[in-house]
Structure formats: structure tokens, C-alpha cells
Length: 535
Image 1 (cartoon, rainbow, N blue to C red):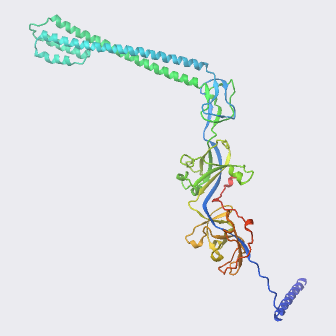
Image 2: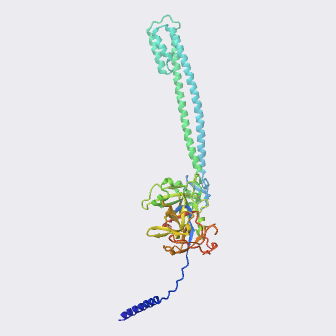
């Protein structure tokens, strides 16, 4: 019953209101004129063109390019420690000294052995020279003895044709015992068979000449044996010298390695030994030296990011790609201080980034590893530390940039409001490019009427107040770009939406130029995509 009564009462109230309004209309009383709404205030800004930048951020790890474990090369007791833990050392700097008494003695002995071997070589060379001269002398004597024998044989045997060939063979024979003795035997056999006429020389003279040849052959063979022995002695002496020199080299190395030095320049860590300890090559690292400058920064990126930024490995040194390293957790005073913590990747003499790619993709992560080289002269980085790697790719050409607040969306796509000729505000469809925290890149379209260009004016704030029907009065406050005076840029451009006639400009600016100074966009716009793994 209560609900029914309330419903009846509500209906009665509505009927009374309707009758009252109808009566007022019928009585001819005019309704009070509604006050005209003031122009809707919106803010606009000129479009500026800049080279777009795509920025990707990753977490990187510093790695030493070179790390050396300093070990003992010889065994002995440590007698000196010249290294201070945690300090920087230079390549070749002495770190430890090992007792060198035995090694110095071995070195002196090796030096003496080399000297002895060199003296033996000189003696052997002299003997060889003498033996060579003896052989040459005996060869000449043998040749003379053969010629004397042939002369006596012809005088003794006469002009026997049977001896012509043997005589010629003996005259041209090589100076070796088998050939010469064989020729003598052949000639004697022929002489025994022929009748010797009245000889010009006696038989004794002939036989003495033959004996002289045989003696010369024997002497030459003996001298040649001595020459061969001298050559062998010289060869042995030279081999002994080589052995002595090898032992000397080992002794020099052993003595040299009693001084333990650093192979690279860098920072040392904690020592693993103390003064007086006996160390050997098997004792392990005495200390570790880590190169501090330059250093590697290792970071990983997805295959998709790599394809977007670099495309392929040949573009790692592309001059349009900038790689920077930023220290983490060092931004106490805002952006300006943050910029101070950025360090550019080292470049080669041609200005190309010193960066290289791993030789395989890590299938468990679907990512690739990259290493960039960074100068670390002031030792801002420590191997193993984390950093932020900022990879920036610059666009090839300039494009228009508008504030993010100017971008509007509807079911048909994306658009902005442009203040055109005659101070008319029109909708302009646009194609979006990279975005930053404050600005959005507008990419060029094939249809030039559906984009914005440098110098045009777009509505940046108050777009929600614009209703898409003719006759809506707008007051457009044009924000001044940095460095532009009020006389150079029209303020309070008044127009209507949808191509309706322009309304007379406002007499006074809604906002004084001095009070409305917008920050000029940066020379190039950044697109940030920091990886969540840094959190």
C-alpha cells in the first residue's frame, strides 16, 4: 500500500508541472533569454620537425677485457713483496721476488758451457781447414804421380796400341783408390803379354813410378779419412754449442722469472701468499690483475629488438646508432645529474662503435649477447657491476612532432585538430610514429592532406571541449615556441569547428605571452623502451 501511494503522488507532481509549463506557454509569456556561452578556450602549438630517435634500454654487466692470474714460474722462497693489495700496477712492474741463488749459479755454469763449446768449435774448424788443405795437396801429388807413371809406361812399352785405351782411362780417372788401382792392374796385365822392345827407360823406373802412384793413393785415402773425422768433430762441437745455448736460455729464463712481474696494466686484488713462503708453479695464482680500462659492457636484447635496431651484424657500427652506458642508482638531482652518468661507447679511428655480437642465439631466452667497449680511465665502472645500456637509433629524415595531448582517437583512427587558413579548426587524420614522454612523431602519408607539416598549428589542450558541429566558437591560445616573441606568433586565434565562418578574434589575449612560455621540443625526439628486468 505504501509503495502504491508513493507512486500515485509522484505521478501527480509530474502532471502539475506539465500543466504549469503549458499554461505559461499559452499565456504568451516569453521565456527568459539564456546567456550566450563564452568562447571555449583551447591551447595550440606550432608543429616542429626533428629527426626521430628510437631508444631501447637494457641492463648490462661490466666485464674485464683481460684478467691475468700471476703465478710463479720457478720454485723458491719469496724474499720480496712489492705489491700493495687493491692498487693499480703497470705491465712489467715487479710484484714479487723469489730467491735466486741457485738460478744465478746455473746461469753462470751455462755461460761457461757455451764459452767452452765455442772454443771447441774454433779448434775443430782449424783442424778441418788443415785436413782440407792436406787432401787438396795429396790430390795434386796423386795427379802428378799418375802423369809420371803414364810417361814412364809409354817409354817402357813403346807405341803399343793395346795400351792406348787403358792409358786414356787412367789419365781421366777420378782420384779414388778403386778406379786408379784397377787401371794400374789392367795396364800391368797388358804389359806382361806384349813383347817389350828396347825400352827408353828401365823396368825399375817403370815399377818405381807405379809404386809412387800406389803410395799417393794410400796417402790421399788416409787424408780423406782425417778430413771426414775433422768434419765429424766440428759437427759434434756445433751440436754441443746448441745444447749449451739451450741450457743457457733456460738458465736465463729461470733467473729472470725469480722476479715476478705483471703481464698487463690493471688493478690487483688480494694476495694469496705472504713473505717467506715457498712457492712453485703448482702453487696457483699469487695474485690476480684485472684490466680496468677499457672494459666490456655485456648486455642482451631480444631478436626482435636486434632486428629493429641493427637489422644485421653488418650494421653494428652504423653511425646512426649510438650506444651509451649509464650507471645505476646515481641520479640524486634529476635529469641533469642523470646525463652526467652517461658514457659513450668507445669508437675506432673511423668513428665506428667498438661493439661485437655473440656467435649464437641463446635459445632459452631468445636473446643475443652483445659486448661494447667503454673507456674507464677514471674507474667509474668495476667488472661485475651493473649498468643501464641505452641504444639510440636516429631516423634517416626529419618528421613532424606534436604534443601527446594533441593526439585524438575515434573508431576511424587517429587525428589531430589543426588551425588552418582563415583561422578555421579542422580535423586531420594522421599516421603515428615513435613517441616520447611529451611528443608524438607524425609519419608522412601518401595523402598529404592527411598529415601535419612543420609550422602548422595543432590544438594541444582543450580538445575535449570541441564538439564536431558548425558554429562552436573557439578561442585558441597559441603557445610560444622557445625563442619566439609575441609579435612573431599570433595569439588567441579564434575559429570554429567544421569549416564554419571564423569569429572575430578576441580583443585581449587570454594568457599573456610572458606567462605562457612552452618548452621547445628537443632537437631530436626519443622513444624509450626500458626493459623491465632492471627493476
